[in-house]
Length: 158
Image: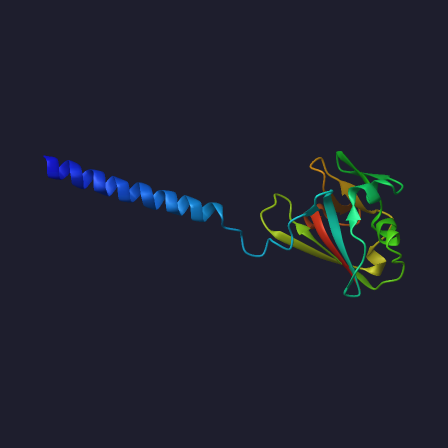
């Protein structure tokens, strides 16, 4: 009887140890491919990294974006509001470009997202909409909702 109890306790101890080790390893795991799409943050808070022709421009912080004129667009039963993407780019002196690649997350935050817009697609109805979580979403009436990029982390301008 004592040998069975000792073996049972030994097996339970080993199981507990393995469960704790696995839990620790899982809590440190980062999904592959999501680091670059995670919203950038600093001590001052959320910001969007901007690259113009491969060179870093000044990041778009919420304060900088909130200083711009705000546009409201009706999208289905909701209203999206924030500065236009064109106005945000002009903050960094970017007025001429061929394309814009916006990186962030897909709706539901289950995967990274990247949306490329040609210059003619970047119109006055393409916004950096302010989310309730303190991040921005690229939205617009000319962009299907399933292509919107939430938690925008980077804008590459070519």
